[in-house]
Length: 341
Image (cartoon, rainbow, N blue to C red; front, side, top):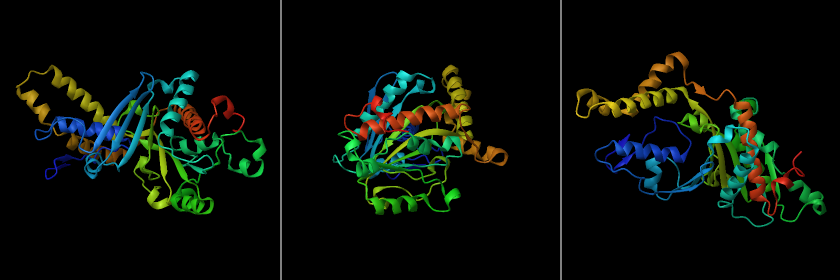
């Protein structure tokens, strides 16, 4: 959708939970609109960093105009793209954990004894949605140790507690209500919520981690938003960690057609009727048409990689170890095994 009044381009037809992709969509759309100049939208700052193996992109939304442009609340969004994470490379897994910890620490501002609540969102019975519970199972949970056996705890270890509350269909209780009850009881200074996300690019599935300080809506990855977890609803800062584990079938079909069209345009003669016809196709309308065509046959089909079991196991370790390193001063990967059972 193009808002001529403010000169913004807003696309709500393609689902993505990644601020990085929302910004890419803006740039792509602005490049094909005569009244728009290419580049990042107003109120959105982007910084690129990292290496070939671990590419880091920091997106910062600073204004309401930036919010409207990419459809993401004001705040910080840090994305780690790790293309080879699907490979069974232990060195890369450990390097990824350390890089994740460094980026997470940039958003964490806590005292030495501040309590942190880690929430593993999702349904542990559905593998693509089991990332949150898997991360919780590999965390250094230390709040009870500091309370009952403090002499056995290393210096620099912060009180951390964790919960995997399940989903509404299992518990009959809104996840946000469960978390709010826990927060009111234990009064943490920070919540870290982990959930599965949706991406608009298949190559980013299970190889990309997003960290955001704007909170999260459980179930948003499959278009089933529940009560959001944010500072507004919880009363304490919420850092959201997400990994895209699914993509819409309509998005895969749309991207395949886009690639074919781009190839045809590249080899077509400029100025010909065929060239002009391809350039004039509205790609947003095309995506909506694909969804309408597929809907009667497959519904809102969500697709995930066939090796998702191994992927979730591997990436949950990356996130859990990254959180362990980030929250506990002086703790290394070798120390984690002493606390994780």
